[in-house]
Each structure stands twice: as structure tokens, then as C-alpha cells.
Amino acid sequence: MDGLIRHITLECTNPLCRMRFPIPARVERIPKCPLCGSPTEQDGEPYEELQVRSTRPAAPGTRIEALLDNIRSTYNVGSMFRTSDGAGISHIHLCGMTPTPRNPRLAKTALSAQESVPWSYSRNGLATASDLRESGRRLWALEGGSLSRPLGEALADLDGPPIVLVVGNEVSGVDPRILSLCHKVVHIPMQGVKTSLNASVAFGIAAYALCTANGHRRAR
Image 1 (spheres, rainbow, N blue to C red):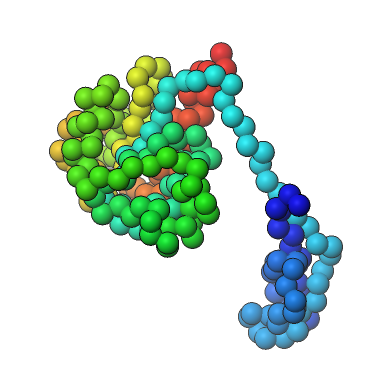
Image 2 (cartoon, one colour):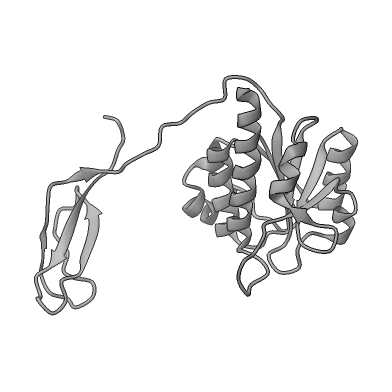
């Protein structure tokens, strides 16, 4: 067995509703319409989920890590683990109130990625950031402000020592003392009226931008 989940599509038989929705093909009883409660019927043949094959870099490049300081939401952190697994983040430093994989709720969005991405935990994000900087790593904070530059511009400076992408609290942002230790402050340009994205979404964009650009450099 390849572990792929098979699905079927159901359609409501009520002509005034006709809601369509998928369910796992292995269910024993076809459910009623969750919207109007009418009977449903299967439409089409069972199908398997479509997956993207995993690709591994052929040669090592700049090591990309992440530091998550005082992220409150287990769902955000779980999503960040899943993103880190997909993008190629090599280690996650969890600090302060950031939940760790020991929290069972984190698994709901991590979907086992917490088992494939190495991580460590520290109560003090400033101490961790200081240690990482002293070890020779470059700290890049994902934050706004007058010193921040667009992420795309910073990608030209990828070559060199390992980079640690620093993400702070969903509301208050990166700790000012940690921010003062960072070599770069980068942001994702915004086109609308809002000035920031959800923490896990912003992390995903930045992580993939860094890792993808890093991969292109390795391929040259």
C-alpha cells in the first residue's frame, strides 16, 4: 500500500441545494447533506489525493534555520513546522511561550512534520539569539519598520554563513532586544490596506523565498 487516501465526491439530491463535498472513500455509510440534511449520492469514481514528489538538494548550500520567539498559537507553529519541512528549513529554535511538539494540538496543523524537522527549546529568546549570533550565524528578522527592506532585495546576500529567520509574537512582533542583534530586517511588501500577514503565512512566504533562492544558487 502506498498510503494515499482515496476520496469520493457526494452531491445533495435536493434540487434546491445540490451541495457537493468530498469524503474519504472508506466510510461505511454515506452521510446526508451537512447543509440541508437531504440524502446524498456519489458522483464519479473514487480518486486519490494528488501529491508533489519530494525533491532533495543535490549539493549543500547556505544553511537556513528559524527562530520562533513567543508565538502564541499552536496552529501557527504547527503550520510553520509543515512549511519548514517542505521548504527545507534545517532547524527550528523555539523560544519563550512558543509551543513545542510536546503539545498535542500542534500536530493538527504540523501533520507529522514536527517529527522530521529538528527543533530545540529555550525559555529565553534573547539568550538564544545571542548564542546563535556568537556562533557565526546571520540573524534575519521578519519585521517592519524604517530599517526593514523588502525580502526580495535581501535574497542577493544569501551566500555566506547560516541564516536564521527570526519571527516574533503575532501581536507585538520581534523583541526589540533581539531585533538589535539581527544583521538584517526584512519584510514582505504589502499591496492592500493591511500592514502585515498572519504569522504562519508570512513565515511560509519568507521560508520558501529563502530556500528556493538558495536552491537556485546551488544549481548554478
